[in-house]
Length: 113
Length: 113
DNA sequence: ATGCGTTATGCTGGTAAAAACATAACCCAT
DNA sequence: ATGGGTTATGTTTTTACCAGCATAACGCAT
Image 1 (tube, each protein chain N blue to C red):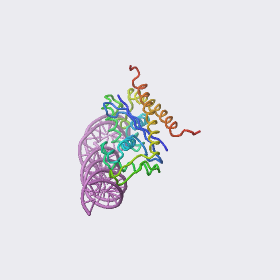
Image 2 (cartoon, chains in turn brown, yellow, red, blue):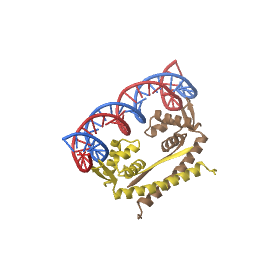
Image 3 (cartoon, helix red, strand yellow):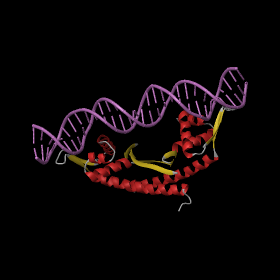
Image 4 (tube, rainbow over the protein chains, first blue to last red):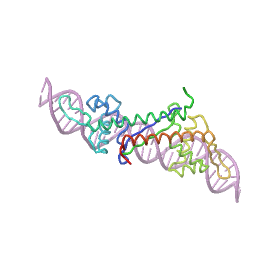
């Protein structure tokens, strides 16, 4: 017997940040490009871009500073607001993770070493 | 800004109990019939029955005592094992709920009365 | 000027999930 | 023996979502 859970943030009933977008944004920070980040995950650029767009629209803030054209063709990096936001979510998510794990042990693995 | 979460139990990677089935089983206990329970929710009997079947198969235990035909046409009631199981899940789920709510407040509603 | 690699965005076909439909079997009551 | 209300299950239809395709604009480098 195992457990699973999902947690995410919404604004006006619309999802704005969950594990998927967190991962994507993290990869973008790491690679400096939406396309490269999407490539690393099993995601199409089309989908990655759409997810970011939706989140930005719903949040009403820019998550990325994007550049079209240039020496590397272009690129994207996180805005300071995005950095703050995902960091806070990461901590929240981490605390929830611990809590769920502990509750599961308590109720479904009582006498385990 | 709001949060949402889902939590459920699995066996060998297959879901066996979550909020949906919990609700369904609760309604069955209340009404003594799969069909009536499904009717109360916005669910078709076909779907309700299928969900229960899958869970029973995966768990390897009977969740319902079912009767075909009879004075009321038939009916269904929870087995003692099902009662124990869903009660434990309910408590687990409740604890998780509290924990998530608290973490959310901590990280996203710092100075609220 | 041509090309490369990027952001940006509409469109479309396929697929998987969900809903609806159709029957059968059962048993008590009338 | 007929009917009502149930469990049980296969089949079909509809819907919703996702993947991929296509295309444009941009700016630097060569």
